Length: 119
Image (cartoon, rainbow, N blue to C red):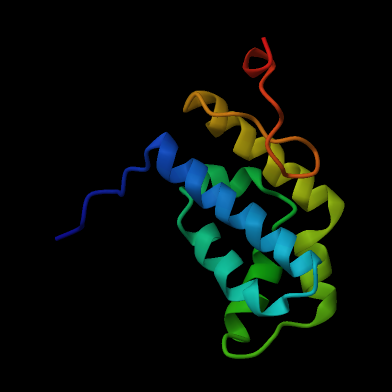
């Protein structure tokens, strides 16, 4: 018997995207050991969200999976964490942050200051 399709709440998707963003940030800082965690967060996303993250190519993600226990080549990590990939994840994350009533992220990946907190 087939299991029913997994349902993903906006909070689940937001948390997975925040995880990807964090892993991208850490890998960009040189912590290549976080590549398997980036893959784990990606797999937590529903397929319709995965398809929209076109900069996180299935080919490169598969190369992480093939190298579990080892670090993927630098070129693969650079493609998964390049500015375009990071920006795409920030934009997707902001969609779900907004849906959940949370503070949006700026282009650097850090939360924007909420205007109403200063008034």
